[in-house]
Image 1 (cartoon, rainbow, N blue to C red):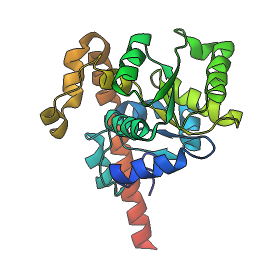
Image 2: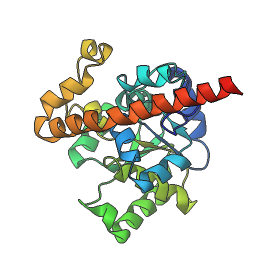
Image 3: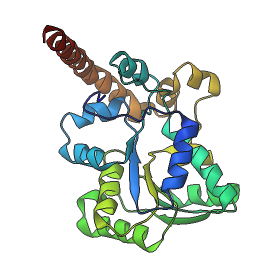
Length: 250
């Protein structure tokens, strides 16, 4: 059942890692990781909606959003944060000796990851600021992915840019592997940005830790998202209620 007009992945992390490992052997596909910020952006961003429509899977990234989704009958087994999924897949890649292509991230992050995971070949291209509005720079990113075949492609340039770029690679029909829109996940994995301690993750307080780490960037965004997502959630519950009433009257 779709919620917020999104067909969410319902399985657990172990199943997802197996599915993506198998899919990474095939022609290119990509996944997206909906969270509260994405739900807000999808209301007005047509390009993001288009990227979502072509994604092979849509993984709930948010432990805060999960109970809302399941109250709306999404029946999702668990929230799978992008950072957790990224770490699990990188560990598989290191064990199996896969190549990974990364679009985004600073050179020092990739250098650290190469030291942490010596069995992985990291192909790295970091486009300039504002690249998504420059067709030539976008084409350079797409060409880099095509010319550096890898089992995994990590797009680390922030939403909605990374989703738009993942879609562009898909539309090229020339790439292989699985693309993942991972945001700052590689910064967490490398230790450049400290991730929330496990007790905060278990209590669904990772958002609070991130605010403390990056207050100037995130306080306004989180407050605005909370303000904007509330009426979207209310509308979704009303729509579901109307649907159930309509069925009961048939």
